[in-house]
Amino acid sequence: MIRFRNATVVLIIAIVASGCAAVEQYSLVPHGSRQVGNVVVPVTGAWNKVPGRMLAYARDDAEVWTREGVLLDRFIVIPGVPEGQPIFAQKAESAALPEFQGGMLPHELAELTESSIVKLFGEGNTTVSTDNLRPHRFGEHRGVMFDFDAITSAGPRYRGVVGTVQVDGKLYLLMYLAVYPYYFDKTLADATAQIEAARLAAG
Image (tube, rainbow, N blue to C red):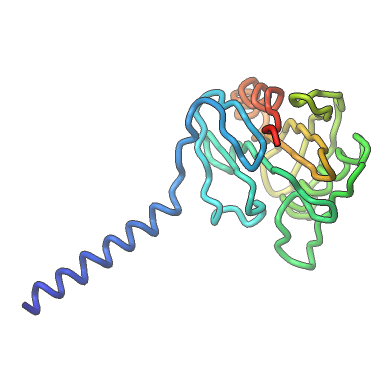
């Protein structure tokens, strides 16, 4: 009887441990349309959803996808950032993130993103610049898209594409960033297509 109980305890521990491990695992993003908050994104190609606990910067309602691993490429969907909040999660008061303000102009949204990415990579010697600011319609809503270049002193160079739209005082943002040139070029077409075709769900 004692042996049976010990074996049962070991089995229960193993099941619990495997369940915890499963929570931390990547999961496949199904093909078709995926809704994150009220942002609907058509899934192009194979992506894996990154566990939230692995990403200190991700807002609770956001999702981060990757193909090759988060150090190489990321596709970030951030739904409905309220006025007065940053687009990334605040990790420490000492690294205060810039905040979204309703009614920001297109160039101000680009500057907000620039400053936020600098904080994301660490303020050391990271330089972020944006260009190719252009209007874009996300479904029935007018927004903007732009490109960015991020050069870090302690890591690889990244490039990215961002789409943003403001609706009812909230900011919706989709971002693709990857190590330049190989990984960026490899997934650019699929990632850009997802951003361009994204829309907000009715209601």
